[in-house]
Image (cartoon, rainbow over the protein chains, first blue to last red):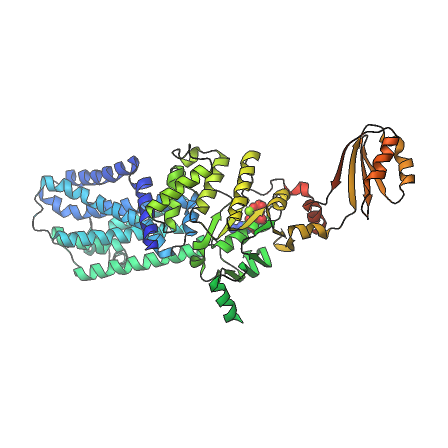
Length: 244
Length: 333
Ligand SMILES: Nc1ncnc2c1ncn2[C@@H]1O[C@H](COP(=O)(O)OP(=O)(O)OP(=O)(O)O)[C@@H](O)[C@H]1O
Ligand SMILES: [Mg+2]
């Protein structure tokens, strides 16, 4: 009960201080809009929108979540206010969950902005929204935890940004969203399968465009496993490096 | 034996709220805290006095769970402070040397947020935050963002945030360093008040006067080692000095020094300047004959006072460190 109060208030504080600040709101909207326009304009027929929607959603989540962690974690650590949280009588797991839940929610909102745009242009009938939502949730969780993993591995905000690009850009090309994994050179294909986004993208492709190539339960399982691993490594890193 | 002690601890009968045994902290090869032992009694003000880099902050950080213990044991109110620190943190209030509040949030929000970390309900949080802002004279600035606060105000709010959940023991790391005299005085008063209400206090400082004024017991820490620990007044008695009385007179002391020494050969005299003279003796100094003597010589006495040994003397004697060097801010960020 007491932990819950702390959890909720940390989340609320982050929402108010970071996520709902004008620069982030506009980032949260402009970014997905830019992705959407870029891809929709490029695809000649309206038929293509549905094929491209999963990619745009996944990108929005990935960029939205990972960039927020650099602020809510690395920045707070720099300014010592993270110490205030470490001194509170709440377990490190609860603390880190409360610090990441904001980014997860932010990622989910980001994912549905392109959906709203697309719904004006094409019909989105026949989609199992329940599975889409579950997929989006899991993508948001794993990318947030990937962001967390990066944030606790560095000391400066700019390092967090650079380091996340190191992960983000290869991921775009290797996750099968824009280039099918089957058409990647055989030697880099295994790389695709160690990236969480590959599985997330597959869920969205399967449900929205009907072209997934991994069994959907494998996708979900893989994302859950990635989430757990990334989160535990991050918490362990905090224990070892930040409680020095 | 241990079972009995644990039972006593559970009932809160046990006197020591903190017990530290052979505590050590090293950073890579450097030993910052070297095998120290000490206890803090329930209800006392315990001071850690030492120069820059002595290991004060390192010790506090280990006690409060902000840094790992390299070796040794910590017991806080019956809880293992090394293994179970999260449990112990709920009864601790911690005021770090550098403020760790949120610069974008105002005073009231900062306090409410800190209270929530201890699981306090909304109503309780807001009531307590308002109370504290008032008590600390910050009620006018409650709406300003923290970054707009002056240094002294920041420190006060940091203290308020540290005591919002009514901790049993409060850790203060150099609470008056770097702020103006008036704010420092107010903070010292607050500490005394808190202690009177029953909060046990652990305070680090490199101001000797502050330690002397506030602490029931003091540990001198130098280069990671506790070189002396004891009750403040006993530490002072420890450096037994001559009894000294100082007189302030009309000018003209120099003329009478020799006859004075002859007539009162069992005392020692020391001329401080033209009109100040000190009399030293192993025994009590009887004032009447001396006053009479001055009167006969036509010198008026304007002031007579007893000079007591200060904690400064004790510190210099024990550590061999010049106090003037201690108050210089060296090695601080
Ligand atoms: N994270 C760290 N890594 C390496 N050395 C450290 C670290 N923190 C402190 N030290 C060293 O440990 C020693 C003790 O430092 P500490 O901060 O505990 O001193 P202090 O008594 O609090 O001094 P001050 O009065 O300046 O606050 C210093 O020599 C310091 O340089
Ligand atoms: Mg210090």
